[in-house]
Amino acid sequence: MTASAFFPNPQGSLSKALSRPGQLSKVGPQSPRPVELLGSLTVTGGSDLTAKDAALSELLISSAYEGERSMNSETMSIPMAFILRYLGEETRRDHVRSSLNRLKSTLVSFRVGDEEYQDVALLNGWVRKTQSEDSVFFSLPEPIRAVMSDRAHYAYVELAALPTMSSTYSSRIYRRLVAAVSESGKRWEPGSDNALTIETTPEEVASWASFPRLRDGRLHVGKLRERVLAGLAADFAAVQAFSFSMSTFVGSGRGRPLERIVFRLELSAPSQYKTRLVYSADHMRFVGGGDRKDLRVNSSVWMRAQQQFRISGRRLMSHRDWFELWLAAVEEMETGIPLTRESEMRVFRGEGLRTKIDLLGADQAAWGFCAEEADVPDIALRKDLTKLGAEAREARKSRIGAKGLPAAEAVVDDAPELPSKDDNSSGAHDTDFDEASEVHLTVDAALTPQEQDDMVFSPLAGFEFLGNDPKKIIVHFRRKGISDTYVREAHPTEDCIVALLKLLGGHIEGVQEYRK
Image 1 (cartoon, rainbow, N blue to C red):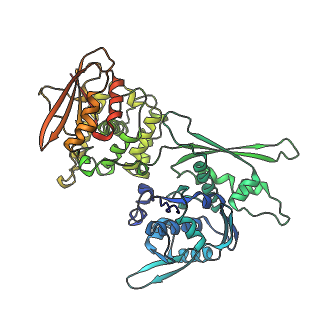
Image 2 (cartoon, rainbow, N blue to C red):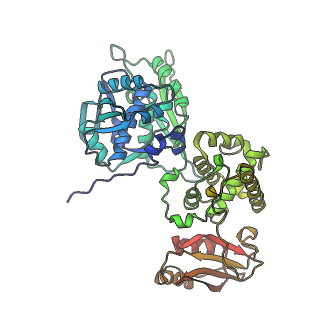
Image 3 (spheres, rainbow, N blue to C red):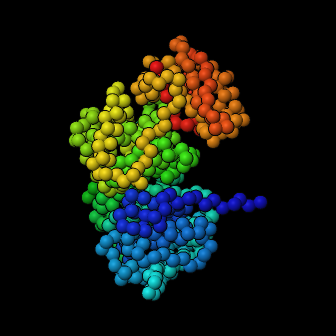
């Protein structure tokens, strides 16, 4: 029996990113590559490639993979308009044609396991232009298609970062670093040491970059410094998966030769697209709220943040918590009044946040903000967070009113209020756990009655609470369209509530609410 091929999904739609101007950095598409291809591919002959040539090559491979994961088709196509948009405003059709010609004459070699493929033509391609069509048609060599379609060990390349690089050497080293991160198995964890150091030599870096040697085979280290190493930090500035820094170490011999190079990669939180969304579209009708056009964030961001991020020292953050935290940061940005002394040191706060919104769009900026708070909490630990959230919500209403948000674009303002026995109940965000006498939970409306009993009420009935203060655990649910509640008297600690939520898994909508 043979194992079926594994086809990882691209992250972010390439066609959506290139269908209109200004979307590439905001969508931030990422394409999977076999680590073998990233880690071993070298240029062995043909034309001297530019950085734009290297970016175009990666775009064509990504387009082919997005169109057909099995990569069985010998010929694929991509609109010329997509290529021009991808490579940048200064790129013209003639530039693309010249780039294709250089790529067609380029030979590469790479290893896959015990097999080595030598002098493989990178691609074949041509332009077809009619009255109704202007497209690039291309075919990838069989060895590359085979590797792309039948390897389980993948890493992701960020397509938006590649056209910003000034040197093809940078893009080659970038691919090696992406492979190294994947092979290390290291993953971003909030509050942890998220740095990966890679120690190497000038000879190895030259090999990674396919940097040319002198006629006698020796490496000119001075030229390597000037033409490769000097530009790496600037060329990696648009990379989102990690921030890059580099240290060089010279020896003590004559001329103090360069002996060691240490790359330091500070890993970033995973992309929101890599956080699986387990909620239905129906749930998201009640998440977040409308805002000014440039500040609107897709509701799925808050749902994914609830799943992905935990903040030490706080109870589980609901989608609504993350949304209000974001609103507080946006109000800080709009007013210019810092909420904390750390504001100016943060990437996604104040004017830095405005820059990120302009560059990446509100969705990715909001995700970056959540990741930064999860890694090193700041605003999230303020004791007056409830007040900040309320003030930020009022400011948002003013923004919407000032811009005259059309009714058709309005979003349901907040998560629905839970049914309450007491009309004077103040809600979750007005009461801390210690002050609360009730803990409210809402069962996923999609569960059948039997699933409610098996997955929620039976585990809750058998759960042991270890606190001293009495509180009511009130569970809201619906059966046959009728709202009902289940009440259990208990003595919980807040840790007990967190443990209970973990036990009940995804069968509770949102997060717990504390009421007096």
